[in-house]
Amino acid sequence: MQFCEACRSASALRKAGTKTAKYPWRCPRYFDVIYTNQSARWNPVKRVLRLPHGVAGHLNVKVPANVTLPGRIMQVRLHFNEIRIICKLPELPDEKPTGTIGVDLGVNTLLAATDGEKVLLISGREMKALIQYRNKRLASLQSAQELRTKGSRRWLRLQRRKRKMLAKNHRQKRNLLHHATRQVAQEFPAHRAIIGEPFNDASSKARSKQAQTISESCTRKLIRQLGYKLAGAETVPEHYTSQTCPVCGGRQKCRRIYSCKSCGYQAPRDVVGATNIRRIGLFGSMRNGDPPSLIKYRRPVSRRRLRSSGGHPASSSSRREASL
Image (cartoon, rainbow, N blue to C red; front, top):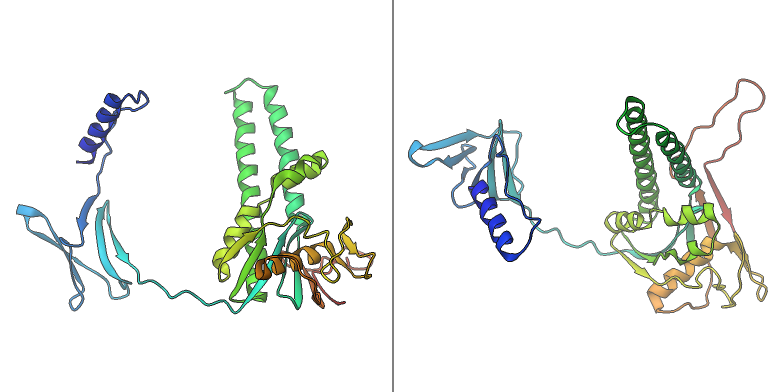
């Protein structure tokens, strides 16, 4: 049935003028037998799933006791050596947010989140190092491949090495993103996130290495993960949020530490950006007020303190707290 339907759709596309439409040239060895919710019968007392087979009768499938159906059966697919049951799950009530946080995404600081009283800064140095290592290693492998004949044994060996390196780097970056967003979800449970809308215009004015890191930052993945780990996420424009003082409203450019010349307020630039982003999401504009008083520094993944063979142990702190 599926094969004939594919042939009819390809013929209709050919007649409509689509030249790229192709007929199925190879039949699969096995087709799934599909049962709708009207044909498949479920007996919860005997725990038997009854599937009709026309003249041949019915197929009774005994469902184990440890298997529970979470909802109403919508479709049953008889696959090779297994039965797939598709159920309709009940809609869960929306979780009401207990607060609102502002999130500023960056490069050296992967993300900065604040609820108005405290700020959580997640370091992005490890993510930045992974991106730079990937680009450097990829360029080295590609330059080595250019010296070999395409399809040769050494070229294929370099191709496998390149794919293995890219897959490992992708897993490492995904692991860091999940750890970073999980720390935000644990620090601000059931909060609604207001995130500054990322834009790549800044990469055109930066240097080559900085532009490369900015363009390859995983901002959309962070927004998506914060959306389902918290009570929702929305984006707002982040123009001049890191240059505007949250106390007096003065605007000036600073490097990593923001120092206001009018009121003397000093704080990391990411703290200033996250505070202003939160106020834009709540009030529609950047307003003056009291800044957060507690700042927490963390890494995406906490690392054990490494000890050398001799001398003093390496002093690497994974978490610090500072009061302003």
